[in-house]
Length: 320
Image (cartoon, rainbow, N blue to C red; front, side, top):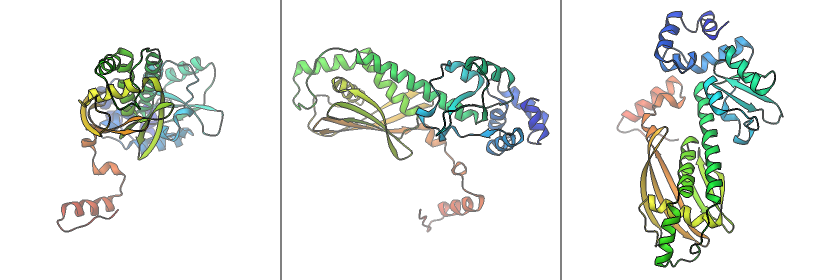
């Protein structure tokens, strides 16, 4: 029995709705297509399907990045094509594979063949699966960019030295615009977008340059860059933000705009001198924020109605 038949049997969608939605998109699975068409409530439908098939419904956000089962060597394109992702259960040395369509026999057979045996199946949102795969792809590219930049040779003035000679400035620009450094900086920004980070912290330390993302209000360490690459990375960011690379004693501000997979984003850049070099913070202003609606906040209908009334009134105060 295919997923379409299960939807019809559980009265979650009609045959006509499924046919119409399938004609709209040939890339997405049926549930994601129906959701995009506004025909179903994805959370409700996935819950009922998981219960009907006696499968686990998982939220991929509940699994940490280092619990993703990525020791399994599977091409990301294969996972993306079949809309599935391997996960490692927290506290258990056991893998499950979450599918957007747990009844897709061709996908199940392909993944079982690649893993070399039977698998435990779970259900997850297609959008979450694709987002997690995108994050993994960005992380892999970040590691490659890091390895490439680590091979960069050359010497420049120490970041701790606030004076910068003209010849050092020329060497800095040349090194910061080299392909490995450009790729590394671009991949850090791309990874931040994929993780939906609101800030990127570039913090110099005694031995390394630490890259951290602020995700959902929490600053999370992401990458340690060798100290010898610190000046190249910070200079590259300052050049992108049209800041003065010869000025290291005073705080500076700048901005630049980049294109990412999710669209265009503005980055506000601030630098401040520290004993170990310049610390740089990039605030990510994602264009997707403009697409957010109050209905997506998860408020119940009555609370949403009262909140909307407060926003439209002149003399109301909302306390959170």
